[in-house]
Length: 208
Ligand SMILES: C[S@@+](CC[C@H](N)C(=O)[O-])C[C@H]1O[C@@H](n2cnc3c(N)ncnc32)[C@H](O)[C@@H]1O
Image 1 (cartoon, rainbow, N blue to C red):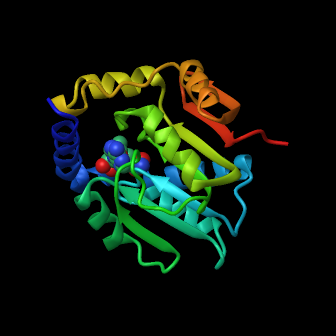
Image 2 (tube, rainbow, N blue to C red):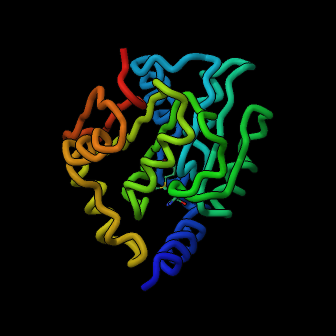
């Protein structure tokens, strides 16, 4: 199967689950957990944040509560139906909704202070190309977070039992992903890979 056919298969799959997605999550709990995460990460109120693989916009919504009038969110996803559902929920001029892929971001060089990839990293078929794009759109010293609120084993079990288009979308141990980040111009600040979460926090270049 060609790379284009693989991406088309994923788009069709995510389009098909867009209406069900929010019903599978405890959204108030998620919002509270994300706000605590932003505190721990030190997300500043005027930041420009890329929500990559934004889905139905739950991370974007939490970010909008965190950011002030100078803050911005680029909410990017390959699935037009996910984006449509997100836009139906969130009407805020600080968000720019864009259909696009993580390995070919529709954003200018150095346009983001931070990238958050929430429950989306294993779906990116070419991690090195994605990291090159993350490095391009982040300003020097900008941060990137990969985040899952379930364990790697749970993510991989869900995907391996799901539709064939995402069955091979498995999370590698965070220590291996950390090596990939370091090889591609990022400094890894922390990793977590345990029973309750999977997270990697890095910054572009060397951080003081
Ligand atoms: C598991 S959902 C997570 C959605 C959202 N981040 C959340 O946690 O509610 C993964 C999302 O990533 C998107 N996605 C998958 N591959 C992508 C890619 N290569 N580039 C951009 N988005 C992608 C899917 O369309 C889907 O909306």
